[in-house]
Length: 131
Image (cartoon, rainbow, N blue to C red; front, side, top):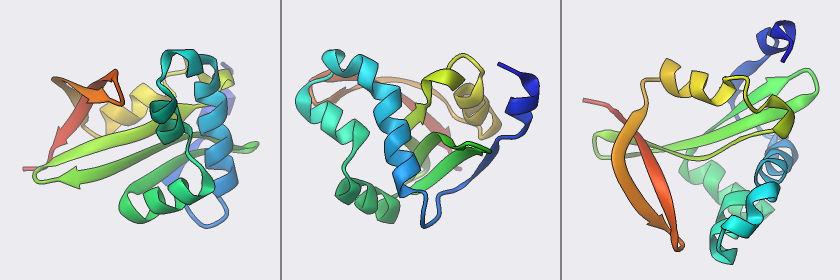
């Protein structure tokens, strides 16, 4: 990955007009792994426009925007004194650049040590203590 391109990334809250880019990012990021997901888990991961609209209302959604458009996305919500991340995706071209890990570390998220059931699949949880 060209360091200059990485420097052009802006992580910002999702805004109206980002929906198509978010859906495209989720689909491209997870399509190679569809066989590893149950049908319900995959549908809840790549989203439909309606499910994305609900997520935008229920969660704080961020995008990683580059000159070519949305190259990454992540959503988060609060449960008591913990913040939970959901729906993190990076376009295949940006994999391995540290874009997602950078977000986690920069914002204080760590592995919780818990593994939850996600439509019959293991889900490794990350959290951030807000206390």
